[in-house]
Length: 93
Image (cartoon, rainbow, N blue to C red; front, side):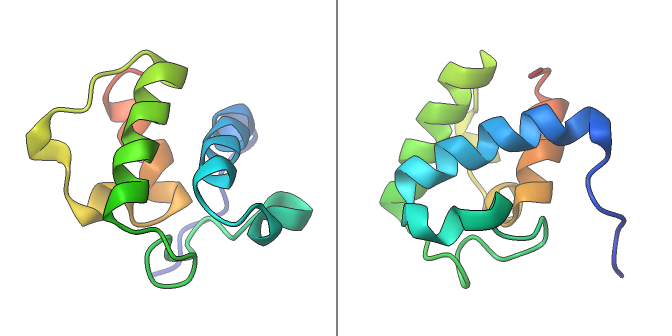
């Protein structure tokens, strides 16, 4: 099931998340706005376990949220869309 593109209200959050990802992954992958919102960060973008931990730290710092151990599941970090939904669920803005 395809979901609609991230709405305008999410553009800033998306940009901030893409900036964090660009630090962890090959920045060349993020030309022209970066990957699509549903691109697999693991399979298509090469995010690994060490990169995921750095991503978590980046998200915690940038959005002033806490990511508990029980939330460290692949589905929360699978795509940019999943990251936006996760950060929002933790109260990040």
